[in-house]
Image (cartoon, rainbow, N blue to C red):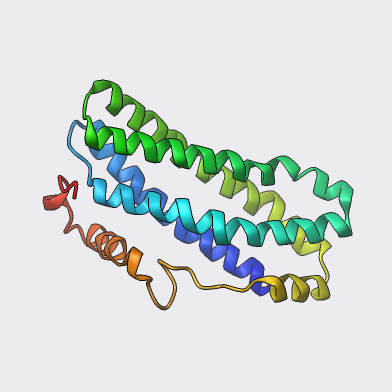
Length: 194
């Protein structure tokens, strides 16, 4: 499998794990308890940075090469890739709702936080599934080894700042919180809003 596709699939796995963690925080909020806003904020920080600046541009490179190779097939995927803009807007709306909920807790803000959180999780999961089922298989069939080499030569940064070999400073606390959550240790700190 080409490196670019392998990396993108791993990034989907990583993002799905973050969506699972966020899903658990939304369930805590729905149960009437305060979620860990540190965890929610950290996940949103990641989704505001990494997919938009690193993940989606890699997919766009593949799409552009695919469009040059087979424009009819690529045309069927155009909506899928323009969905990146919609996801970016949704991420910003959910981040704003999260800030509003933290700064001014109340029924209206909680409902907005919960609704946008659900939409964010579901939209990202659906989008990644469509890419895995439609886009990646088509690219694998249609692109030549030379195409993949050209794509990979254009990518300047393969390292994920949260899941890579070296966790970037800005994501270290999220990394620790996720590890704590996975071990069940964050439950007693779920009210931290810091």
